[in-house]
Image 1 (tube, helix red, strand yellow):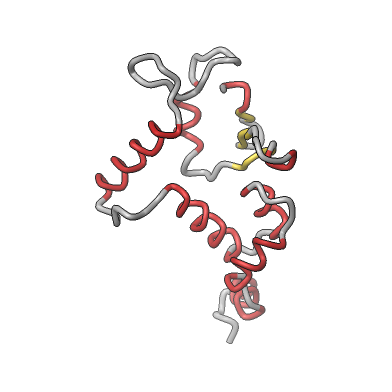
Image 2 (cartoon, helix red, strand yellow):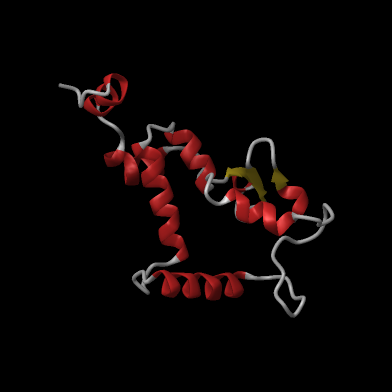
Length: 139
C-alpha cells in the first residue's frame, strides 16, 4: 500500500506472516526506488501500489508473470527466479561490507546466523578494505 512507503529512508514496510520479525522495513535499492515512486504517484495512503489493468490487486502469480516477461525481454536465463534476486541482493550486500544483521533483517531472518552461514564467504577481506581505502589495490 502507498502508506507502507517511506520516502525519507527509501524503504517499504513489509508485513510478514510467519513470525513477528517478518514484519519489517525493507530498504529499496536506488535503481528500484523510482519504480515505486511512479506506482505511488497520486494514490491515497491506503491504496494498493500494484493493480492489474482489470482493477484487480496484483498478486503473487501476477508478479511471477511480470518477472518471467522481464527475464525474457532482457534475454536472461529463463530459470532465473524471483527468489534468486534475494540471493543476488544478499551477495552484493556482503561484498559491500554491510552488517550481516542488517542483511538478515532485510531478508526477513530473525538473526544473522543464516546469512553468515550462506553468504559469509562473500564478506570483504582485509585486502579488499585496504584496496578501497588506499585506491592502490592493497599493494
